[in-house]
Length: 373
Ligand SMILES: [Fe+2]
Image 1 (cartoon, rainbow, N blue to C red):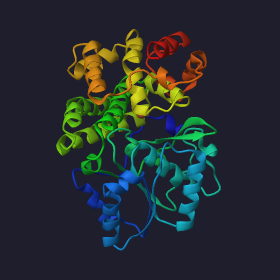
Image 2: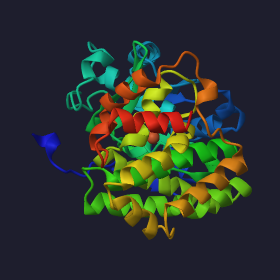
Image 3: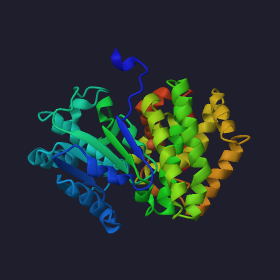
């Protein structure tokens, strides 16, 4: 019953602005277990900075590096065993969405030592807990919004499954735009379009409300106003900062309302081909909005509030991003032995299809998949 209520669950503390990573110096912890991205993270010196701040306060640390790709039940269980052996009292995930999702999942297995991730497939089934450790999430991309959200995607037996728990919302989120400076224009575009999609799908979700709408609109506006600037001038830290706030706001909105058909398609197609989540969302965004527009006036309402007179103007903006970053605009060339009928059926079963503003149909989904193949 409690989880059927519209509730705003967000981190106890969100630290913002350039240089805010220094907040780690004041962490209330004895031992921190760090989960971070691949070697590029080390290359840019972020991990070194984290270690320096923690060590300055005599906080000991265990670092697990090189999380590559999305979390699977196997790799999460392995890292959770390392965490159990460390006895840390703070879990810190620093990286993109997959790294932060890994940190959430590992934390859940640490708090519930006898459990496996399959025990938590039912939404909100993780027991109330903060007995062993607190959770801190620090994004290094402006995109997933995972640093403020109540979900984590994990692959179990080859199937991508969202685990939903309000206990995933961290105690502390740190948004330091300096950490996003090394992101390439292409990855910046992928992650920002993902964040934009969270905004528009949340606004049109059947669970939207006045509060989440204000988050979605403000976040999407920041993304629209700053993405091209960051692609053209990647060192513009002020624009990077606004992108980061934009993705945090749309992340918060989607955490409270879920998303819709674009994500349902992306999740399903991603089980068959390897393209980044944000790139898949970019491919499906306009066709799905056009499908939804026929029954939902909220799409045009949202677009107009962002300053676009119609969907074609939004499409032009997105096309410019595709061209500037040489983003992939068809998914077909990356697929082998794909059965579009099977993917269409699976898309209808994705949890995000439930909150799409228009009921998804096999014919509707199939026509979008074929048009973007
Ligand atoms: Fe997403």
